[in-house]
Image 1: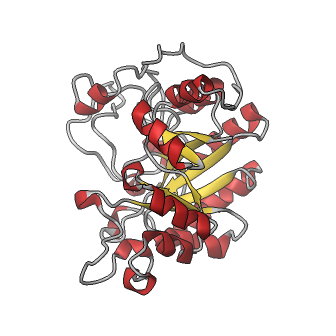
Image 2: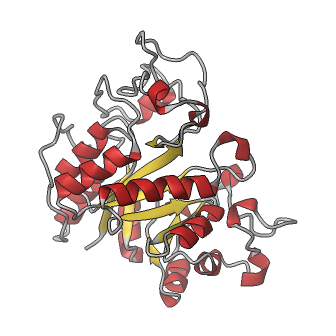
Length: 315
């Protein structure tokens, strides 16, 4: 069965990285939920994409959207973080325009990783996986905790919630993968890559190896991103879906790698990737991916719980 991953829960439908989004994704029926992880000043692993409070998603205790990027997550305690509401996007912003079907869930807070893990384990009876993306920045290390601190914080929550068998750890910063492999060798790791424009983390042909690759030099691997992924020790490659073609899929297959691209939202792109034979897709609209698979007579994961909010119409 193709793995359907709800990106940041399912941010095309519910506010990203919130308990409402994860509950909604479970109710819809996914194989896994994908989330982003930060660490607070007091060492609490929390579920949020941005290293700083995002003004397009964050309201203060008085209900006002932040005027600009707020404090770094790493500079706030969890108690301080709890005062912010992330249950809707700021009206009129570009983010809100990208996700017109997203239903607000006022009062949602940035959750602890432990709370999300417990929710998924309980409501899915341990049958839905959790893909945890660690957000670190090797060229701006001051923005977050270190890879080692992240790995230790995640380990505590995974062990406390009994979800060791459900999680995988993903990162663009491959120092994180090495830290997780040392601390939790039984946990699958996923090497994320981006090769589009200024966001390129692989940087084939650059004068010096990319700092995102954890010390690996592309030149030593024939400038093959797939061989680099294999050398990272990860069992799964998570590329930008735009970077995939049949030759790369074949190379990954020959090296025994799973391939789960991100973030696939358009039906035409889903169709192309199905034809390429990927193992799964991460999508803001897992409902659209489910509908496509069902139209082809392909199996989809069952709903795992009641949807917390009414389901938007599929577009």
